[in-house]
Image (cartoon, helix red, strand yellow):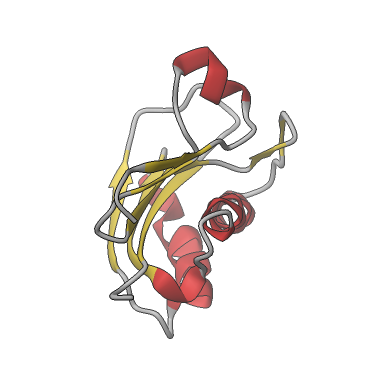
Length: 130
């Protein structure tokens, strides 16, 4: 691979803000944009655990477009709106990544574009040497 590859997410944000759902670098690193529990234009509401699981599924769907999966994830970031949600979101992360053990961060933020969202996630994956 000799150039950057960009993959659309299919969301309104791609065209509205000029972004991609995932970007693959020539080094094999794949960066996935922030993902929420928004699916098909609607928010899959629920508690922090449910939103985290749905958001990670959106991220895995983006990774799948590049030919990578959960096992290729090397870094995650979880943004939450309330510190009280650390355990619920952490439980979702552990369920999905306990055997993968990516580098990770969980950051409390003031809010998201829709106030019903309480979790947003980012993932980075690595293709490895060919």
